Structure formats: C-alpha cells, structure tokens
Amino acid sequence: MGSHGTGGATPKGGQDFLELGGSNDQNHHGSVAGRHRNCCLDYGYSSVAVKITLVFVVIGLSYLVLNQSSYPSQLFQSSDLCSSSSNLSDSEKWSSSSHQFASVDQDDLPSYTKGEINKLESTLKEAAMEDGKTVIIATLNAAWTEPNSIFDLFLESFRIGNHTLHLLDHMVVAALDEAAYARCMAVKVLHCFALTTAGVNFTGEAHFMSEDYLKMMWRRIDFLRVVLQLGFNFIFTDADVMWLRDPFPRFYPKADFQIACDHYDDRLGSTNLGNFPNGGFNYVKSNNKTIKFYKFWYTGKDYFPGKHDQDVLNMIKMDPYVKDLQMEMRFLNTAYFGGFCEASKDLDQVITMHANCCVGLDNKIHDIQMVIDDWKRYMQLGPTGERKSSTRSWTVPRRCGG
Image 1 (cartoon, helix red, strand yellow):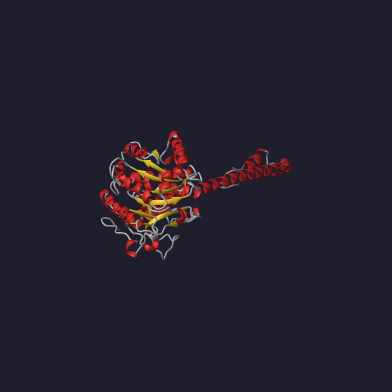
Image 2 (cartoon, helix red, strand yellow; image 1 turned 135 degrees about the vertical axis):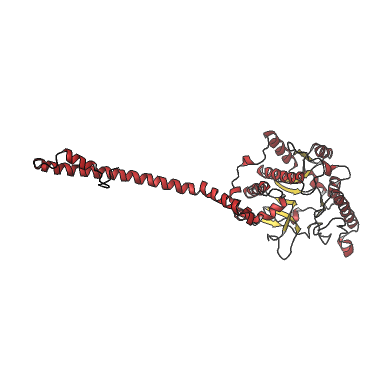
C-alpha cells in the first residue's frame, strides 16, 4: 500500500525519480520537480489508502461490537451455564438464563390449528360473563368424570354453595379425552372444549408426578396461555376445588395474577413472594404482562424436566424477568381460599376448599365428600348468629392433609 523505504523496498516515487534521470545534473530541476510531484502523488495515494483502511477498521470494529452483543454473548453465557450448572440450584440456573427464555419464539410452543382456535374462541364467547371476557375454566380427564367421582362432587358444590349455582353457566370444561368430553356434554349448562393431545392418552388416573401427570399439567399451562392471547380473563379451577361462595368479592380488583396457596403467612401478606402458591385455583386477567408471564412459565417444562408447573412457578416468581413485567401478583389467603394443606378455620369465611396435599383418587373422593357433608350441616344451621364455633369448623382432612 505504499510503504516508505522500509526493509530496503523502493517506493513508487523513488522509482519514478530514477526513471526521470534524477542523477543527471542536466535534469536536476526537472528531477526535483518530478520528485516533488511524485512525492505528492505518493502522499495522496497513501492518504487515500489510510482513509480506506480506517473505514474498514471502523466497519470491522462495529461488526465485532454488534456480534458481541448478540451471538457471542449468548454462546458464552450458554457455555458458562453448562459448565457450572452442576454447582447451581434449579432456581439459580433458571435465573441465570431467564433472558434467553423470555424471547422464545412462539413456534417452539405447542401449536393449535385454526379450526381449534376458532372453536375455542366461540366456546369462550358463549361462556363469558356479563363483561364479555371472563370465564371459569376446569380441565378434566375420564378418571375424574366417572359416576360418583370428583366431577359429581365438584358440580354439587356449586349447587349447594352460597350464590354459586349461576357460575356454572360460565364454566368451560377443557376435556382431555373423549370420555371426559362426553360427560361434559351430558351436563347441559356447561361449555365443553375438546383439549386432546396427539399421541397422549389422558383417560386413566394420572398419578402424581408420573409422566402423564406432568404432560397434563403443562398442557394446561399452555392452554391457559392461549385463552389469555384470545383476550379472555379466567378463573382456573381444579375439579377437586369445592366452590362454596362466590369468589369475586374477595379478589383483588387491580391484580393481574392472583393465586391460591398451599401455605399462606398472614405476617407476610398477599404481595409477599414467600407464600407458597398452588396452581389449582387462580384468577388471571388478559394483558401483555400475563401473556408474557405464561409464555415464560411454560418454558420451564423443557428447562426443568421432571418438574411440574407449581414447582417451576415457585422458582420463577422471584425472577428478575417476572419483576420487570411489573405484573401485580397476589396470593390468596387460605382463610378464604383453603385446602387440605391448610384448611380455612371458619366456615363463615370460606369461599373454596381444595383437596390439595392429597395423593390418590379414592382419598380425595373420601375427604371431599366430608367437605360436602360439613357444608350441608353448616347451611342447615340457619343465620350466622345461631351457629356455634364447633359447627363453623371442618372435620377434614381425614385421609388427606399437609
């Protein structure tokens, strides 16, 4: 590129000078002029070369900076995560890589056909409450819908509850198999949607933490994400939650996401992340924050294989990504939204009763039947003032309990 006299190399200007006879006195003036001219030419060429070199250097540095902020940084982080993963807890591993999951492409999530989406949207519209965008959702398989099983007790709780019967008009049952769908259709007031999964049979009892159980739980999370994306708020309820009063008066009006708990600490309060949520009952409003949250939550299925949705929720509830969403999360007091893990102490206050902390379908049915019996006795006692303290408490759990 026109190096000046380095390593004995002859510059282009020097070559021109010799060709012009620079050693001849006769041509001295012309030679000096020629040398001056060629030095200027050499300087011009060098100046252009330097400018071109600088341009390429700037472009090269910009390219490196841009790439460092995208591809290499992610590769380094992934490599670091893999090399140190054995020394991190599950929650630490999630936190250190959460930014990667926040941008997971929607194509990576289970897909729904256009026909399924249209059918779901139509079902949700039919079931919606007066606001046109709030529904109640339950998921069921055949084992829970057999005669005299949990589904019958679930429906009975609405019938004997205090101002709860009308809520069945807004109930969407997402049936996980054909038998559950047929059973749903037989109950005329319900709205039924076939939420089948190709290659998976959810007909039998899905034992806690079995492969089918985990598939069922994560299928539910993805389904609820779709409901939010369609613009519908929902109360999600497991079928082993007994509805004894209308929950809406006890919900926090401004919360985006509120959820029942296995264990609730009054000293912590409803906003404290130290409470232990239970995914079997929650009220979620449809907005960008909750949609992103459910997408983020769902990615835990692959990142934490063998964990169910509730485990992952407990891991991510304190994650910086969730905090950055600025989603108002509330935890529901077990005094009102109780369960067998932590039973509500006063039947004058109870709204729902969940058969959580209970393994085995027969055990659930036994203790849920006791809940129904307790409630019926309570309702027969007349006004609250006539009820004694002994009649305002549960006889459950008996076979279940935390």
